[in-house]
Amino acid sequence: MFILKVIKTFSAAHNLRDYKGKCEKLHGHNWKVEVEVQGNKLGKSGMLIDFHDLKKKVEDVLAKLDHGYLNEIAPFDKINPTSENLAKYIFKSLNSQLATRNSQLSKVTVWESDTACATYKE
Image 1 (cartoon, rainbow, N blue to C red):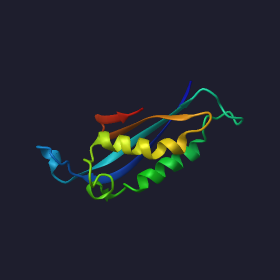
Image 2: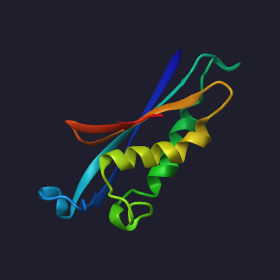
Image 3: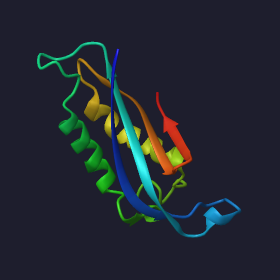
């Protein structure tokens, strides 16, 4: 099994609904996002997927969130913009784009700080 990982970042603000504590107030993060793709068979080029293509797809999804107020960006205008929900949103946004004959998206991890992250996988 081959596993590829790319790491990208974005900055955004949010506040948590239905939460009592510091995070109910407006605050921001420099989010780090790890996207992992896996597969058993390499293509003719000897690659599972081109890193350039993978990075571009991740950047396109994150561009919708970058320097935004997450609570005003769909679907986070309806669901809480937690790290867990961000990881699932990014996974779902990328899943069909990254599914090929040779590879599939395996997981997305979203770091809100150096010591706290959430991972989503199916």
